[in-house]
Image 1 (cartoon, rainbow, N blue to C red):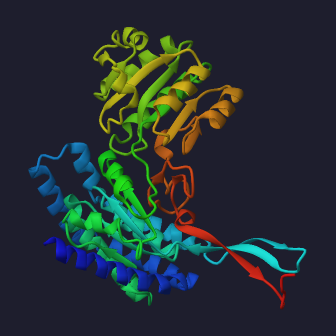
Image 2 (cartoon, helix red, strand yellow; image 1 turned 120 degrees about the horizontal axis):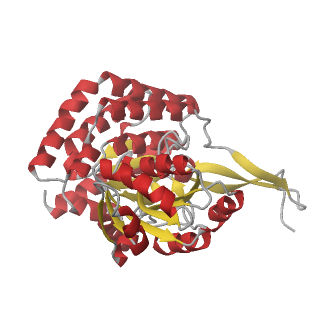
Length: 426
C-alpha cells in the first residue's frame, strides 16, 4: 500500500471514528452494557475460530525467530480469552460514570456550578504483541462512550482482525455504530505516523509496547499522549520483614510471568536481613533458571547457593527492564537507601516494599514516586483487571490526567456545567 492510499485510509478511519464518537457519547448505559455482555458471549462462542487465527500469528512469529517471551505475549489461550470475556462482564456490571455531575455549588451570583464527566471523544491506540489488548481497548472504549482506532502489531494481525470483527458484531447487535471501534487493517508503518498526526479526528494517543515505540510516538505525535516507557519495577525486602512471606512474594513478582511490564526486574534487600533472605530466594531463582546480576555483597552470598546463576551487575542493570528470567539484586542499608535507589533508577511504574514495620511502609508509600506503590504484595498486581477497573487501556507513568492503570475514568474528561434561572452578570 503506497503512502497516498495509506493517508486516504487513515483519513477515512478518522472521519468514521469522529462520527461514531458523537453517537457513542449519547448511548445509554443499558445499550453499552448490552454491547459488552454480547462481546463476552461472542468471545466464548468463538474460541476455536479465534485460536485458528491466533495459530497463524504464532507460526509466523516462531518462523521469524521471535524470542519465546514475546511469542508468549501473542498467545490467545482459553484462559486469556476467558479473562477478556470476564473483563467485559466486569465493565458491564460497573456503574456508568458518563454524565455524572460532581461538586455542584451555589455561587453568590445565583448560578450553580459543577462538573460533568464526559467521554474524551476518539482515542488512538498503538500496541505490540498481546492481541488481548484489542478487547481491553475496545471494551473500555465502549464503556466510556468513546470511539477508538486500534493499530496492533503486525505480528498479531490475524488475531486482531478476528477479535475486531467480534467487537463490531457486538456493537451492531446492540444498536451501536460499528465504526466506534476500528482496527487499522494494514501493517504499513506509515499508518502509525498518520494516526498520531490527526488532531482533527483523534483526541489522545495511547501507545503500549516497547520503549522504542513509545519514544517515537512521544516525539512525533501531534496529539496528547498517555504513556509509560518501560517497567523497571522494584521489590524491596525491608528489615524487619517476614522472611517466608518475602520469599513467596519476591518469587511471584519475578517468576509468575516474565514478559509483562509489572514483573519485578530489580530486588533490593536490607543488609540486616540479607544473610537470611538471599540464600532462600537464591535457591528459588536457581531452581527456576533465573539469572541474578548482583552487587558485590549480594554476589558473595548468592554465589554460594547451589546451582545459582550469578554474575556481577553493571550500572546499566539497575535501570534494565529484562522481560526475561533475569533480575538485578542489590543489598542496601535500609529504607532510606531503598527509596533513593528506587526513585533514581525506577521507571516510576510499580514498586513494592515487604516489611513488618508500619512506619517504613508508610514512608515507602509516601516517598516513592511511582504510579503504583505496594506494601507486602507482588508487583504483578499492577493491572487494571486486578484493580477492579474491568480492564486497562495501558499503564501511565505520566503525572497528569491519568496515572497508573488507565481504566474508564482515564478515558474521560470533566467539563464545567452552569445552571441558572435567567441570571445575568452585574
